[in-house]
Image 1 (cartoon, rainbow, N blue to C red):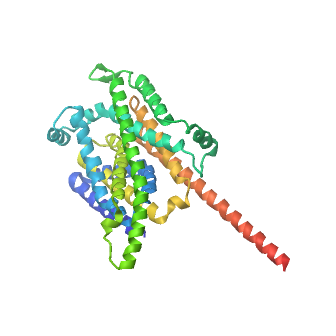
Image 2 (cartoon, one colour):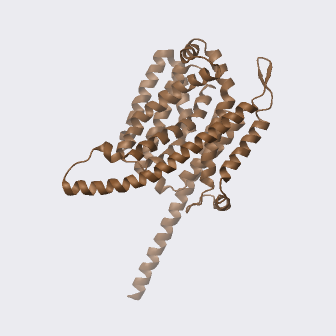
Image 3 (tube, rainbow, N blue to C red):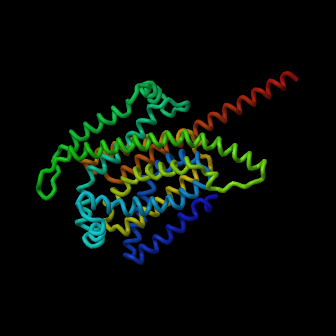
Length: 381
């Protein structure tokens, strides 16, 4: 099971490390290995959230997610995205930006650093909305009940998450962004940039979230139709194709997953610049890490881990909330990527341990109930 799910990840790792040695020697190998670990640690929460969506899709679309999806994730977000950032921020053509990335790495890194406030505001707001919508929803299973119960009651207020997100954005633009940013000795006010980028992130979330909700409903309708079609096929003996079985709604859910993955990868891409400004090594390292995140997502789905460890999804969303806040803080202050990664890992590990304790308590209670029942039966006899 592990080899089947992670086989491609192991193969990509081997090829990536060999490519790193050929490209830049043993130093490059070390950089790629560090970047891979960085991506996995920063994106573990991504895998858990993705698994919650992917489990609604069939095996065909899970395979598409692992194949076509990984190409989008690696080449789109880990290779093209950093170049696009520079092209937009420096008002350069894409070809010129690629030339700059390959030939003038210091200048390229400086341009990415200049673009960081807008990236952090956009990504931070998108992730903050994911977190807020999660904690304001009333759920049957609660991890931190003392916190989640009152928040679920507050969540009954319409548009509360949007209001809070806008307040956070306003505070961020007035505190972090209005402080002096020294670039070549000049004073730069980033408040307007942060405000516009943050609003763009909020609008993107609302569009994506709205489409996601719409397509989730469509997916349920499609599943009912597919079940009827399968029953019809069994009666008539006519086979149905895998693509038809997947349904149109699953395709849009796949697109939603890709947008979600893109929002999660902001921190990994930005964090990678703290380690190297070589886009080839960056693509290799982050690409290997992204492959493991993909495989881990599918593994969680196939093992039913989210059903067995019910607090994992909570831990992942708290990690998203922490990451959103950290991204907004990095508009002004530099935060070590190790801290960013560790916060997510600690929160998910805590939720996993809480799930294990819950499962043990339920098993112990069931065992005691069975024992009491047997005692009653033997006493009756």
